[in-house]
Every structure is written in structure tokens, then in C-alpha cells.
Length: 262
Image (tube, rainbow, N blue to C red; front, side, top):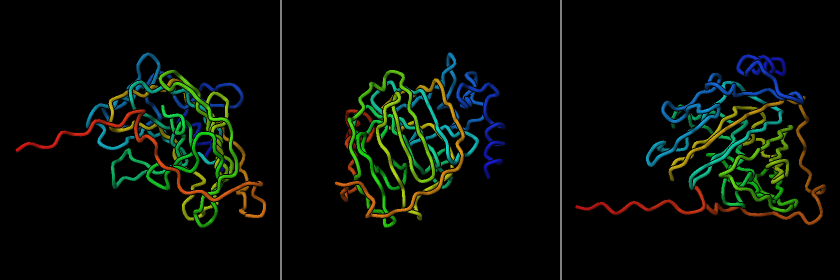
């Protein structure tokens, strides 16, 4: 499996490798190695640009890398201009029954509302695991445990920021500009994923543009899956409910449609 992953990486990534063992998944010229809904994605001045307008896409759409990753470190330099959000999808799978560019899986949220910035989240799945500033463990029954807190990282997503995902076994860590936002350990064997697709989200709703300047991937050696033992949770750990969505798109709610007239 590890040899297959390396082969896939070499097959779809640009030949130019970055420093420290990272490989660039975007060649800076075109969308070779990626699959997205026609008309939504383009390369402008060496940057991937996703454009969302009212009614298109009708549902969240994804630019999907033509490869899979298991244990890795992923770094994406992204900004969102307009009142909406984006996300870096990983260990995901397609939902072709919805659209060819709809996926389910873990996401590092690129969101203007600070509680959602780089939170641990699952698109079309279990929702929010931990806000920005909160570390969470999900036990085998699907119960969330808050096991730690950290200062909330605040950034302006209308400017370029580097979002990092480190996936080792069932431990997932998100960072923005090198600062950890949330750590999530997933013990839910029925729902979790240990391998899958990487993608960039173009959110439906409020008009905006998502810009992706760089996507770097480093394949890591396979890590053991951490076992769950309530007795070993950090002191002060507590059960929590599923965190609520504070803002589904940007910082403001989308405009409501006017009632139909007869």
C-alpha cells in the first residue's frame, strides 16, 4: 500500500519537489492532476481560482486531486475573497449520487469566523468535531470528549495563509501559519477514514472567490492507530455535545429569497 501511494504521488504530482520532502501537487500552470466541475475552476497568474456565484455551484463543489493519501503532512496556501468560506478536504471519498464533484470526509475549514477557522470538521458527515482552540477525542460510540484548550488562532482569510493538516493514524492536527488550531483523535471505527482523497472546496451560496497559491504534500510513514482508554484521558477531560455551526458561510447570513408573487 505504501509503494502504491508513492507511485500515485509521483504519477500525478509535478516533477518539481519542494524542500523538506514535500512535493507540489499544483504545477502553477494548469489543473493537470486535478478534477473539478467545468466552469468553476481556472488558473490565473499561476494561482488556482475557484469562482462561486449565486446559484452556481448549487451545492458545495470540490477540486479533487487525482490521488489518495494515508499518513501525510499537507500544506495549502489559500485565501477567500468574498463573504463565504472554503476548506481543505482530506481522507475523503466521492459521493457520485450527489454530483461528480461532491465528497464526504475530513476538512480543515478556511473560514472567516474565528471559531471555525481551521477547526476539525467532517463535510457531509459528522459535522464539527472541535472548534479552533479546542482539542477533541471521539470515543468508539461517537461521543465527543474535550481534552484540551489552546489560544484561538486569528487570521484574515482574505489574505493568503498557510493551512496545514498532519494526519498520522487516527490523530489529526490542523494548523494555520504554523500555529495549531485543533487536534482530533478519531476512535469511531465505523465512521472514520484512514486514507482518501485530497480536495479544495468551493462553497455554494454567497458569491466569492477561492484562491490557492500552493499545495504541498509530504508522505509520512504509517503510524499506529491509537487505542481509546477513558482512564488515560487528560485530567479535566469532559464529554461535550456536537459543536454548533456559528456561521454556515461567511461572517453574515446569506440573504433570504423574496417570497414568490402570484
